[in-house]
Amino acid sequence: MPRTGTGPDFIEALARGLDVITAFAPQRPVMSLSELATTTGLARPTVRRILLTLEELGYVRALDKGFALTPRVLDLGAAYVGSLGLWDVARPHMERLVERTRESCSIAQLDGSDIVYVARVAVPKIVTLSVQIGTRFPALQTSLGKVLLAALEPERLEKTLAEPTRSGLTPLRQPGREERDEALREVRARGWALADEELALGIRSVAVPLRDGGGRVIAAVNVNAHAAETSVAKLREEHLPLLLQTAGDISCDFAKLAALPQSLVLPRP
Image 1 (cartoon, rainbow, N blue to C red):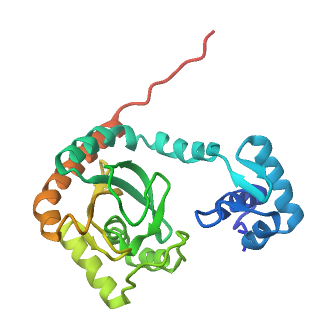
Image 2: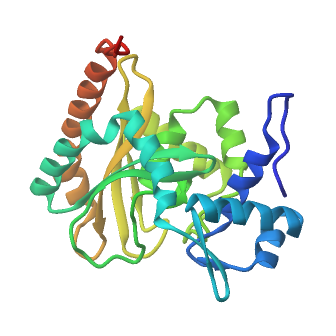
Image 3: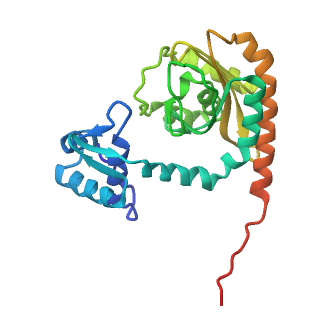
């Protein structure tokens, strides 16, 4: 259903445009006007005007069988990552961690009940699920998601998990509320999370939080491995200590960056 605003300053046209952009998914990279209208709940004439506008701006292109997003959409996500400054801070630390573990390393943040990857340094390995910047997975079945969910207040946690996933994936495991709460309590107590083939077969990872200067959890970072190659014991005993050190270094550098005074650029006379 199309989004409706909660105040007089809500720009409905902008919300509808975002609804059309986010209607595209890996399972439906090309969509017809009718499909987009059905998916978004918007009228066909409205969707048509939005598509023509997005096409003129370079965010979608018309094909024989419908419309598809263009790479320019990545600029929207890149603007977020760039404004955050997290990638520039994290990259050298992540690269060193990957060199030492020979495993992929990723950073993600919460978006509803999903995690969204915002930074990644990968090693060439065959895994069951492809991961890149902007990929989203259900949070509860990932180590990154468990870390981020564990940092939420109880009321916000329930509201977050009540939102349907937009990942298009059905997790391998779906824990009940009691099991879920116990797992998140354990994450809060020990400060890290493990996921062992909960999202899909062959995927095993360990994650820890990234914090700002005030101690607030702003993201999570993980080491991801193939279950057939890396045991749970190796993740805990060898990779986790290195990951904790890396997370501490990233958090420290990010806090320093945030504390720097913003430079003021004066206009030329």
